Amino acid sequence: MTGSTNNEALGAQMNYPEKELEVFDNPNPERDYHIRIDSPEFTCLCPKTGQPDFAEIKLDYVPDQCCVELKSLKLYYWSFRDEGHFHEKVTNMIADDLIKLLDPRYLKVQAVFNVRGGVYTTVEVEHKK
Image (cartoon, one colour):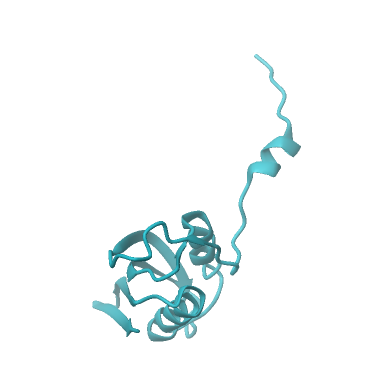
């Protein structure tokens, strides 16, 4: 059986990593409520060895006027895949970018890194307005 593939159509639907985060208006800005987003497939590179570091990024925030759009957050996380960062730096970078974007009432970023050399590392950054 033979078939044809329209590569242009496939390429048009592909997503690529990018640092551009998008927001949408908070539908209930009068109320405090938590948004929790777990992303278990985060990767970046060890700046010393160039080996991949794998982590789960756990985001918990109380929005003020806006919320982060999930697809843009996924592509943002993906953009770190080929970059070398220490665990502490990348976690703080993510927190800084989200704080600047959202100006949330509360935000916590927890990066739970997989074992490396017999050591587990978890980095937490917390922000309160």
